[in-house]
Image (cartoon, rainbow over the protein chains, first blue to last red):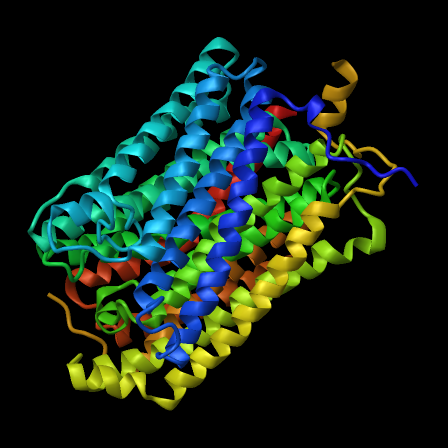
Length: 486
Length: 100
């Protein structure tokens, strides 16, 4: 049997670059899971890695690897679609390649410094060279500048390509969002000794950068993905992209207020944050109506089963992770007890996985389909597609299991440490030694291994899917017409 | 400015908060299914689910002491979840019709 090889010769320059981004994304995804397992185990055995690889380091690598692999996936996704969407070659391909290597080199150096240098003197040199100290975005200041430069190059590549080629609804939203992607990150680079002011701007990066500009990026990739996998009509997808972005910004921008409850900001943020946070799930719930309408009218005939399955996982994960798990503890009357407990970690695990990891994996499968020469990926894959199905099941089951386990631990913390104990130092240790708290963390570790098993199978599948397939892609919907006329 | 949830109501508030979003989604789902299939009994189911949703909002509002200004959140939730699915359905029909 002749095996289909991964053939880059029929990929565009932007798509070859996207493959590089996807490769680093998968490596960082692996690092995220590995360091997640280590830091999870350090909850159970605090002496593990003590003074060599402490919890603060493993947790930091776990979270920063998450942020970076998602960012790499999104950037790769945009480079993958930009030439098809604009109908022209990528402008500034060499500069784009330079930015990729610059960013990857910076990431490598930062991770090595995190792992081997770890700490420095309590002055500005540490902030510039070792660790900026802001949770989730600990990269030192020099790397911050590198990230902004790379985002600006990325913006220029994409905007100039659309200016040279043709604009579309998707590209318009995308380019405006890339301005915010480079701009909002700057808010996290301002140094101030006032912790309230520092946290105020820091949340702009965490909430507005990660939760707003990323959501819009994902919406653009999703819109393009639906056109490609389901053959959805561009006009409908574009209209819905506008509606979704408007709804998301309507509730999401001031929903930022739920992060301002306890950091020393004025009291009016309690009202603003409470009101808009209560409205944040409404767009997610409303989208259920559109999903029912579309599936009822158009069924689910598609050209790429694994990608569509991950797009569906995205819809459910986003709804439960961001919607249900977010709203449960978002109003200040209850957030007073839950803020910063494992409850937040529970919400974070499901929301990040559901909203972002799923969409990246979907685009990996779409890229692989073309990279293997537009190979068949619909129903009846080799081995009944067991690898992608097991990867999907284990990864989703693992993350959902971790989410529920952390929720139990978080509830124990909120109840014993905060509500009963009044958030004292002694109450903190009472909660940490609580039976339910510890059992929850053991279950989290178990489901962490399940997630890791899912990742191993996912990588195996990404490396092998379609290798022995002789059939070609099954085009559906508007893509069939496009193929006939081109 | 606000009164935190009572310790005894902590679990109730958590469950009610989750049920608000879940019933909200179930209402949206059943509402859309009723429109799609034009079946009267599904409409009745949708109305029952909205009643369950309203009850969850009421329980949440009581547990979290949503009094005074905070009652506007209760009203916004009830109206938002009621109107948004209907608006999205109209938009779905409108966008698909205009592209045909």
